Image (cartoon, rainbow, N blue to C red; front, side):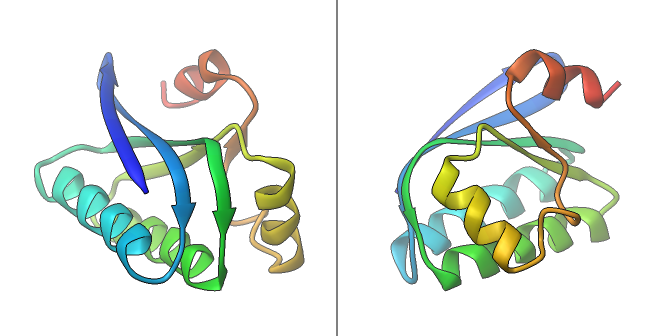
Length: 112
């Protein structure tokens, strides 16, 4: 998985591409989120529009990253879920845990 980081105002946007699977994909996400939160970032937005596949370990890492951010009083939200990712989160009953958004403007406004 590849993660491109950009900043809009005080929101860190992680543009994720590829697969979030056991191994490199989950490690990339874990490392990036923790480094940002440890560095003082309080507003994180994961753009999942270009995620082609996510397995159970990837779902687990999303939850772990959410918990890690929350424990440090940071907010992690999800942007542009693919149909497959949305279905997986619904099956796992996690759509109520994450704030999800279809467009970036609405997501950014939600942090205010």
